[in-house]
Amino acid sequence: MIDRFKILLASSSPRRKEILQMVGVGVRIFPSDAEEKIYPTPEETAVRNAELKALTVKDKAKPDEIILAADTIVVFNGKVLGKPSNKQEAIEFLKKLSSNYHTVITGFALFFPNGKLVSGLEKTEVKFKRMSLKEIEWYVETGEPMDKAGAYGIQGIGAIFIERIEGDYFNVMGLPIGKIYDILTLETKLL
Image (cartoon, rainbow, N blue to C red; front, side, top):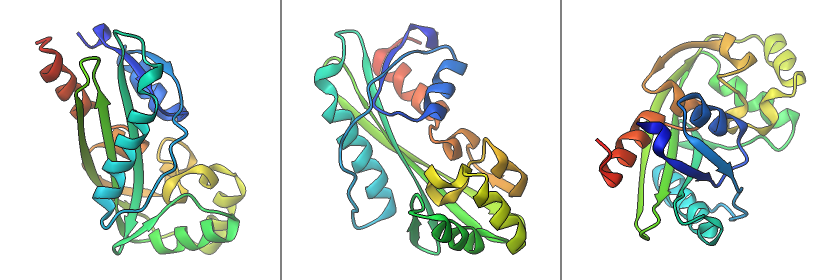
């Protein structure tokens, strides 16, 4: 059923593309150049930025394509940990996450050919193992943390530091595909 959907992904994230392809969705990439903004809450920030991304590429979609955009953020003690701006900031982020839980929030937006915009979010709790400073510095030197919210990638080397996940694994990768599938089938009445 899911292979009937044609998605224009408003993201350059290889992880989001991989998740869609993994479940058999036809996907075309057209990254949004929308400037992300900060809103009063992390939830609003993730959802509104996803909506903005989807709407900025609506003129690029083919008549049968559904636009999908997403914004993933990491929240620790009420503060958003974005993509680190340098190695030192990545080290500081990982020191905070070590031995602690944090929340991964992905806001997503689907823009349908009929002009309807449907958005939502998913939250997942993630607990890191205790990491020594030596492990943190080694991990940062791999380069993996530098382009990822919270300075880690669960689908890569960062997986070795994860102790527990409560919620959707794919949300932590950047796309809660189960929830998105439910909306796609509801909105297009395929089931």
